[in-house]
Image (cartoon, rainbow over all chains, first blue to last red; front, side, top):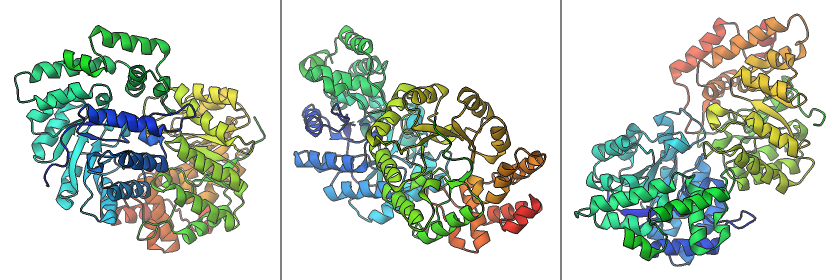
Length: 309
Length: 309
């Protein structure tokens, strides 16, 4: 185990597209800078929320280059670099290491289902061995509802035993607190991030590093406030507030819902565009989402957000 | 609907690797030629059995080029070209069309789960529209046990309505005969292939085109014999035989088991290598598999195979 590379609130930044579905680089940079200005401790770009697996390798690498060129410190970036094939995963991971990224968030190879921990270990090990760099810091990405291929406790054990300086943390997007708790208990010092801010306070109280959460795209300052106040007597109240916001948003399909919120905040309709196979919210859904958030006095406008949090 | 592009027995050719896990091009060409010599009606290269999603795009395109350069007619090839991202799928599909491949076997984008038919339709439609070529013939790849994203009957309907000359068939690897039967019933003239030879005779008797089957790598001639004799009184006996062979092999993990059989036939140990996250059969499993096949008098040696079929 090494000193913590990341802690706090990381945001898997949304990826904006133009009408032709190509990534909108300028809007992406602007959004990422806004997130950092709101207090995000890092950006887990190219995760599930970022529609990363709906992007090609070159698109991902070009966008990552653009963020660094735009002045976002590479050490604050934790790009998703796990892919179905070792070749793709190697290309993405090497690129991230070369740029100086603080870490890589790695999905397991997710095409084959029911594969063994031995096979998953070999997939990660092959990438780690071929990169062969102390600069590589891997965060395992456990998201069984989507990937359908889990990162089990025994797989974490195997990887920690062989690569204690490289495999440094995990994002738990299982939605299963019992699993997060088990990781926190079995692997103290491992940088464990909840995959939703709903579990942020519980994660911190059990020694975790923070959260990496989709809704961080809409409520970065509110979520960060829980992190900065988690040892104060305001913590539970602040947690209840961000949980309410999260649950209100996730009544809708999360990625298109978050894009509607950014489109509304910036008054830029194109922000609502998603890549297939995702689909945009209907006009009615979008209206209802905005009304639901108004109902609970939540706005993406920072001042409102801070006032109500 | 167009005239049938493919019918009979197509084989999703295994992809051999060297000790460093790189594809063994020469062994691949040799195996593909052997399959065609055994009577395969076509090669559905780069499917699930081919470990295609464990390959990078360049690796897949290089291997496809090599087959055509080696003299396998492109019109006999139905490469897998479906990917999670439209960008990757476009690159693979354009390459296959440019080479003159007879068809493309397309997985749906398989990262996001629980997506709508509308979203899947848009993903296929975007690729079809951007390729914009009458030469593109798409076979939909329905393999819910692995992809976890199904090709529903309503999605087939939507695609057939909009792209009747492009979306020409389907491989049903659901393992669910009721689904295959429903496709055959609802879409007569659609080139429907069973994903396992276990359903070959039933598929043909219900108007289907044939099968595209992993075990075709080991038993191509036996399976083809069912196709050539399906309207004779030998059909059921021949079907029972290939079903027995299939069931014997699939008691083991299918891809590594098939690679063990080719390694044994050619006396080339490297043929047993698989890419992570798959793992090779253990020594005991490999021995047992070979013993089990001996028990039922099956050998990959063609003469034996024909004699026992």
